[in-house]
Image (cartoon, rainbow, N blue to C red; front, side, top):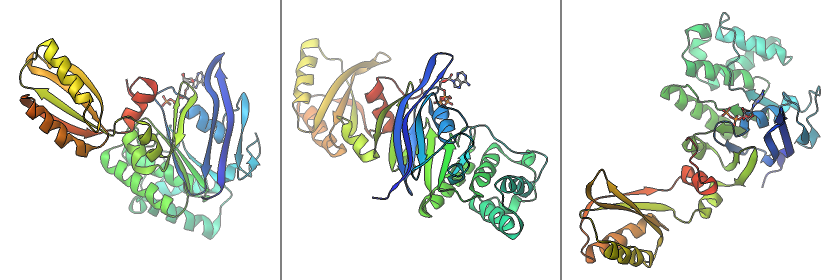
Length: 324
Ligand SMILES: Nc1ncnc2c1ncn2[C@@H]1O[C@H](COP(=O)(O)OP(=O)(O)OP(=O)(O)O)[C@@H](O)[C@H]1O
C-alpha cells in the first residue's frame, strides 16, 4: 500500500455557533482517488476549504506528507491544486491568457510556463480553443479550464469540489477522461459530489459525510459488503391476495436461500396485485425466487431486478436518500 499523502485530523468548524464540520478524520494515500460524498450542506466544501488552508478550522489539523498546513505557510499548499465550486476565470482574457495568469501566480515563467499551459490545455481537451475567451465557452468548458488552472503547478493532490454541477454531458465525459488520465499518471484526487454514480466510477476509496460527521471511510467493495442485499427483485403480482395468503407468501419468500429481506409495497395505482420488493444476496438468486413464486401459483404482472448502488448505501446508513 502506498504511503499517506494527506492526513485530516479531527477537523471541526462552526458558523455562528452551528457545527458544520464535526471532528472529521480521513486520509488520502499517494495516487488514491477519494470520493467525498454527502448531501447538500453536509460540510464537504467547508472540509475542502480547510484542507486547502482557505478556511481556518476551529480545531484539528491537516498534514501533507507529514508537513502541517498552517495559515500563511506555502510549502504544503503547493502540493495541492483546488478546483473550486465557484468558477474563477477572467472572461475577457483568452483561455491561454487565463492559464498564464494563474501559472504566474504559482511563480512559473518563460518556457516552463508555456509548456505547462500547453500540457494543461491538452489534458482538458481545450488545446484548440486556447485563443478563445471563456465568455464564448459552455459551462462545462469553463469548468475544464478551471481544472487546467489547478494543474499548472503539478500538484500531488487535486481537489475537485462538485466539478460536474451545471455541466453538459459531453463536458462531463471529458472531465471524467481527464480525471482518469490524471489518476493513471499517479495524481491523488479528492472528488466531492452528491452524485453517487460519478464517485462510483472514479473513486477507490469513499468517505461519506453527513451533518459534518464521517459515517463511512472505506473502499466501495467494503461499503457494498455492509449492505444486506446486493440486488433487488421487484415483482408485481397479477392479482390481489388475501391477508393470510400474503403473510404465508412473505414468510415463504423470507425462508428461501439468497433472500435477505422482503417488503410488500402495496399495489400500483389500484391496478393488479401488490408489489413485492425482495432483497437478494446476488442477482443470480432472482431465477429461483421467480420459479418459487410460480410454483406457489402466483402469476406476475411484471418483474424487474436491479443491482444495489451507493445511493442504497447512503439510505442504509442514514435512513434518508442522498438527494431529497
Ligand atoms: N460562510 C458560511 N457562513 C455560515 N454558514 C455556512 C457558511 N458556509 C457553510 N455554511 C453552512 O455550513 C454547513 C455546511 O456547508 P458546506 O458548504 O460545507 O456543505 P457542502 O456539503 O459542501 O454542501 P453543498 O454541496 O451545498 O456545497 C451548511 O449548513 C451551510 O449552510
